[in-house]
Length: 321
Image (cartoon, rainbow, N blue to C red; front, side):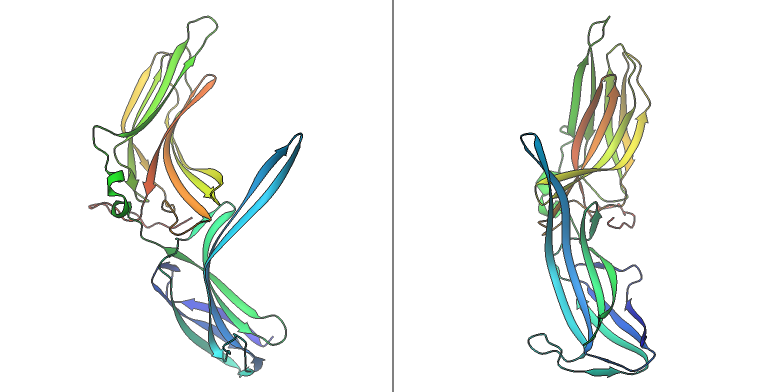
């Protein structure tokens, strides 16, 4: 084969770029024998896609319908070698001689785009593709996936919603009566409270947890969880469990326990809200799950994952996965 190698070299070892930043690099082509081609181009593409299933019941018959939605943010092609007409048709036949050839390029990542994201049956992806355009036969291509980040500071957009007065924490609680054959019914409850709403990946969140077992039976596991809620196409929701930390194995009958400032370190994850994305939406919550005989209590409060930390805090390096 005349083309020994085709490779994209980008001036970024980790292939991470911020929206508005320039992607610089070169398409490297190694030729063993002279080859006649139409030209060489580079393609930059960014798009979001999501797939989900919907079950429709019609009497006794159920039909599963598969939905798919795509949103393209940009799809730009640039000629690196050769000539393209105003109607985007290749006008020349070029001979690429034997040897190593480098075709430099640069591209400014658009500003009004969402950050990269990879999830189950859904993604926001940005790619760079190098293409040797041939008149006959398939084009010869190479492609690299790049990560696009975007600053998200909710204090700048909704400062009033993020400020939580100390006397009014962000909280939720759950309560239930548990009956017994030989004893009067007892009540069990759990509650969760936060004094801060916005966090960055790598930050340690601290929650107040209270669990009460006023029944006559021993409780089960109590855990604190970080959950990610994905909304596909504005109609389908999928929840992912990102962290599940055991708080205690059990509570004795009549026991009540409280944990002040219980720590949960936030993992590397995509920030809340995908800017300008109509295909996907992302939300997060912190939840407490308490297991009792014949009942599971669940309380949750929403949080915001940002990229801009508060002063005097330096987040860990994070990626969107």
